[in-house]
Structures are given as structure tokens and as C-alpha cells.
Length: 240
Image 1 (tube, one colour):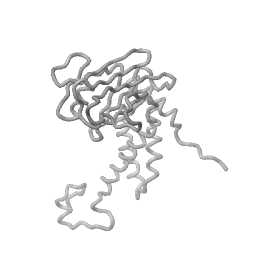
Image 2: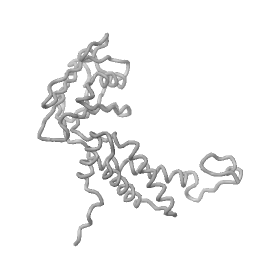
Image 3: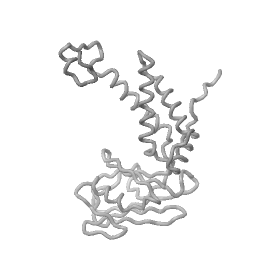
Image 4: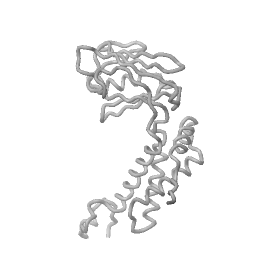
């Protein structure tokens, strides 16, 4: 039985976008990959008119251009913060081939290597991010999940090189970090999510956004609109 060849090689895709991110510019190969990805993902959806499909593909390609630098290309550690920091709780980044970087939480005024404790965990995380050297470490903040992601810029996604992150929480408070292993305080930088998965999600959302413009939800399933509604609606309908 013949095996259908994938329309894009996930590893080649990730490698090409990684190269682009480090060069801070998209290559022709990456742009062509976006077009292929958007075209293939669009095949999951039904379009009455091919012109609508073309519009959806164009919308998804635009979103790829808009968000392409947000994908994570290097080894990462993700921490889900369960509560606010307290004084002297510490994050230590032990970056292979570079050295250790220590960040200490403080409720009073801060110096280099310290970060201010604010009134919410997310605000404190923002202060921690401001203290981190971005040339060495990428840092991303998910405010909805109260999660912080550290990305090792210095060693890429070479898993033979082991950078580490250590947490020194207060022993008298509730757990600071959500962990699978009880009382875990040391974490290794692991392989990042493949860029193919990230961009497939971006493309999916871009196509659905286009579908919602072409065929708004309130007009689906046989629903009708009166002429008076058509004259006053701002949902993409023209006045009659």
C-alpha cells in the first residue's frame, strides 16, 4: 500500500522558520511553505465558492506573516505559577556554555538581579521578565494560565546541551510552581513544540476568521434577516 507523502516536512519547516527568526526576516522558502500550509489546511473546510476559499487562504497567510516570530524555536522550560512570590524566593537559570543567572523576588526596592513583587502573580511575572537578559533568554508570559516560558537562545534546540532552571521557594508557603513531581525544584530545558503545530493553529484560526466574515454565525442554520435588518445591520451586509 502506497504511503501518502506529507505536504510539508515538519522538521524542515521548523528548521527553516528557526533560521528566519534568528535572521529576523522571512525567506522565500518560508513564504512558500506558508502558502502550501494555508492551502492544505483550507481543504478541511467546505466553501461554496472557490473565491471564498482563496480569500480564506489569503487571510491565513496574512496571519502567518503577522505572528510568525511568536513561535518557540529553542529549548524551553515552562512554569505554571500557583500563587504570588514572597520575599527572597529565587529563580536560577543555569545556561550551558554561558553561566548562572539569579533573580530574587523583593517586596522593597530592587537592585540588579532582583525583581519587584506586585499585588498579583501576573504583575510579578512581568517584573521578573523585565529583569531577564533577553539576549540570552527568551521569556514569554501567558497571563490567562499564569504561566511563564523560558527559552534558551544560546544553545538552540540541541538536546545534547543541558541548561537547567532551579526554583528556591519559601518552605513555609503553599507551592509556588505546579509540578508533576512533588516538591520538584529543578527543571531541564526540553525540546520546544514543533513550529508546524504552532503555524497550523494560526492558519486554522485565520481560515475560521475568514469563514465567519463570509458566513456570519447568526445567518447559519437557515436563519433569515428581514429587509429592515439588512438596512441597519453592520455585520457585513450592504444597505438595500
